[in-house]
Every structure is written in C-alpha cells, then in structure tokens.
Length: 512
Image (cartoon, rainbow, N blue to C red; front, top):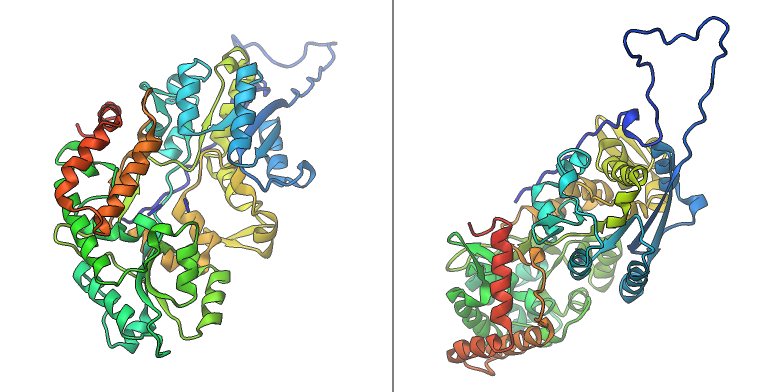
C-alpha cells in the first residue's frame, strides 16, 4: 500500500445549478419585459427532455459490478442526465495495451486513467486536452476539491493535462511487540540507539520464552525497514528528491546519507536485523511478524490491524500485543520516513478531440465536478444515504450494506476523496491507528512530480543504486568508496536525470 502531521480534509460543497448541466434548458426568463404567457388562442407546447449524453470511461482497476447492479452508475446517470459506461480493466499491461490501442486508432475514451509515463507521452503527442484554461471556471469545484498542489501532479511542460486525485495520507510506522518489551523489562525505544538496543535484546534474550534463539529484532520490506532511521539523519530514502535549505536536493548527494548508512551498517552488524530483509517481497515481512519471528516491523496499519490479520496474530500467540511507536529520534532529526507529496492515487485525462463536442466535454466536466461536490462525493465514497449509511449528528454511520454492496464505489472516485474522513468511516475500529500514522512527522519528498526525461532509462541505475547501497549496509563495500559509487552512477545518466528533475521541480515552484 497506497503512503505515510495532522491532516484534515473536508468535502468541498458544490451546488450544481440545473442550467449548468448540458441538456437542461432555460426556464422562466423573458426578454424586454414581454409576457411569457401564451397568446389568446395559442396552444401550450411541450419540450422533449434532452437525451442523455453517453460517456465512455476506462480505468485500470477491477471489481466493477454489472450495470444492472451498479447503483453508482444509475445514480450518476440520473443526476447528470448521462449514460455512463465505465470499463475497468485489470491493472497492468492489459490496461496499458487497451489504452495504447485506442489512443493510436483515434477511438478516444471520454475520460481515462493514465500513469506518469503515459501522461507525458500522450501530452507531447498532442492527444490530451489542456485543462489549464478551464480550472478557474468550468473545473473550479474540482480544483477546490483536490487542491493547488495536486494540480502540479498532472502537469507536463507547464500545462495541466490530467486531474490528480485528492491527496492520500501516510500509513506506515514502526510497530513493536509490547509483550516482548514487558518480558525483558524494556521500555519503548525513543531514539535510534535505544531502537538498536531493543532490537538486539529481541534477538539475543529469548523474548518468546521458548528457550531457542529463533527471534530477530527488526524487519520490513527491504530498504523501507530503515525509513525512520534515515529520517533520524534528516534524509529520505536513497534517490529521493526534497527541499533542503531552499533548494531541491537528491538524497544521495546529502552528506547525512553516508552517516545514515554508517549507522544502519552498525545496526545490521549487531545481528539485530532479520537477515532476509533485502529479499522480502510482498508481505513476507508481515508473515514473519505474525509468526512471532520478529519484534519490530515497519509496516502500514491495515496489515496489522485489519480483522483477518489481527485474528492470525492472536491465533499464533494469544499474548502477542503489537503497538505503534513514535519515530525514534536521531542525531539530526525525527522523521517517520518520507511522504511523497507528488504521488497521486490516480490521474485522469480527457482527449483533445473532445474539444469538438462541446456538449460532451461539458458533461465530463459536470461529472468531475459532481463527484467533487458534497452530494456526489458522498455517493462515490459511501453509497446511498438511508441504505448504505445514515447521517447521525452530521457523522456518517455505515449500515451492514456498505461493506457488502458499496465496496466498489471507489472506482467512481475520479477526483479522489477526503482520505482521513473516508478511512475513519470505512475502518472505524482502526481510527486510532490511522490517526497515529497520519500524525507522525515526515520528510516531504517530491519524486511523484517528476517525469523521466527522454533518453534516460532508470532501470539499470535503480538496480545499481540498490545493489551498492546494500553493499554499504552489509559491509561488502566500504563507505570510503561512496564518492566513487556516485561517479559510476552519474556515468549511467543519473546526473542528467537529477538535473532534469531539479529543473522540473523548480518550474513547479519547489526550491525557489
């Protein structure tokens, strides 16, 4: 999943006047004071209601019900006088192939999901509608809902070509076995040195009491295991961009990076770290924690507190008690890892060809505005009031049908949702864990805003970074060779990438 300051987002309240919806005519107005009443002997006339406008939307997701069971579609069609066809392809290559074929053939969807690479490609090919001129009027409700910062996520060459979903919130923290702390008469660690001491004790002092040396102190998903430790030295993860002293900086060039690596090297050498962290994929680190093999884990709250995982933990050991802990202090700072403020949960673009069909273009705008307003946003978050939820003193209270019938509504959240409020309703028992993770201090990173420059292939460079940082951590390469590591990395085009990223971020207003 998904990240990782108290954040309170409210649903923008938008009233859609009937005249704003395409197909709705004027009513009641007359010119020059003339009476609108029919003249003597004339017959009243009736106006046929405008036909619904068809909208073709595609995205990379799954779990959409059939149209006859899709109450969100039915509600949107009715509210907007539209006929929406949403096709949700499986994420990955299947969706990319479908999208590329349609864009190449000129069979453009009216609204479609893009990733960062496709956004840049289609924009530079002139296939996407520049949304910039519409943001302060036709799409103002959307702009107000997602915020100014989110607009930058859909920007290519200074123009907005995609609507980014409203920001998410961070999920990850260190979790620790409190029952193991109690067994060994230890306190919750508050510094990185205390963290190392506790992790070492969990490895050496038989915290599970089985008489075997079969436990480790710390685990996680590869480098993310050490995210709060990097944060203790004031740096985000290797290769991250962020603002420091009024400039955009890549973390590999921050002098504190070497200091962080030196401490992590010491931590690993102490034997306190689960040996296979760099091989952990998926949720293998979670599985090891559930089995009682480790006592500290860096992980997101859902994979510890959701009912199915909580039950697994109790089944293995009824006395296991996992608690979140505040990021440990380091010699420079106290950050619970990075939080990429440029990352978007989704990007949606419109084809430039839609300019030729003003009615349909307006209808797409109406849809985006509607799901950004109070009524539409509540629908695509929670379902139908009185059926899937009730409002009690202004608060959303789910019914039993929300989980069973409204689990797919997120597929229609084209502009996102107010994340903290949404999660607090959907996962009410987990609310304390959600708020705890959200309130931890984070280093704001900017990688999500960056497009890969032409001529640079990040695959080899990324692999080299991972391999060499791993060597530094595991004492397979001395830190005295760190500058040589950077020189080799730059020979792989990394300097061009960094220079391009800094320029892109400067153009978006960062580091100025």
